[in-house]
Amino acid sequence: MFHKYLKPASWNNIPHPPIAGLKPYQVIAQDGSDTGLFTGYFEPTLRGSFTKKPPYLHPVYAAPTDMPIMPDRAEIAAGALANKNLELLYVDDAVDLFFAHVQGSAAVQMDDGKIQRISFAAKSGHPYTAIGKTLKDRGALHLPITMDSIKAWLREHPDQQQEIFNTNASHIFFKRNDANGPVGASGEALIAEQSLAIDDSIWPYGLTVIVRTTDPREAGKPFIRVMRTQDKGSAIRGVIRGDIYFGSGDEAAQKAGPMNAQGQMWVCLPE
Image (cartoon, rainbow, N blue to C red):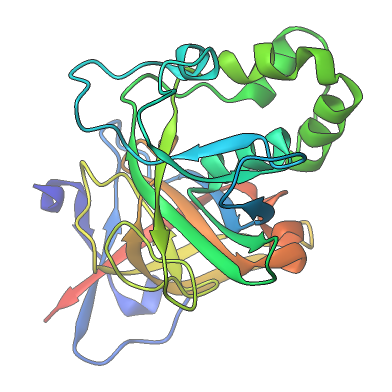
């Protein structure tokens, strides 16, 4: 149970006013640390079509139900899911699609002018590897590594894109989402700077938490929010590990991209 990671705390020692009816507990990791990593994500916008035709050539797949062993990313790119009627739609940009996998959702501007949202449905079960780390280890990128710098490198090296993508064996499957906004793994609508993705093998959905970390837009400025555990992510593993949802579109991307900072977390439970 997650309670073993909670240490009773006082509102006097928390960087947020008391919340009526709730008692705070500081989250402490297995090693006794009270600090962990907080990153950011957003809902990207893609361009797509329900029909495969130039330039819409990159399929967005639903999860297969008849495959006891899921293929990895390289196998899927090589055609492991072809002819299984799993294509939800097609998009025009492989780089943007890869990052939709990282974010777990997207709003797709269809060629008929309508918006079709897609949401996380399942993952292949293969391990997640951050391609930014792969590029750093190969000497292709240097710190600080951001989503924008990774995208720029991929677009400058189109002949190496798929090979780099394949170093992340994990593959995300999607489902169509006809709501007006992105929906988290909890089934609830995500709210900018109020929804937190966590390791759902440790934390349940629906918890009220306080996060204190550093604002990605201004170095050293505190970022303190009351949030709810509403989502999960392939790379979100650990007791003090959170991914902050920043919203949809370009402005949200500019906030989420550089978000990578240490911080603390408190869980607020009914008194």
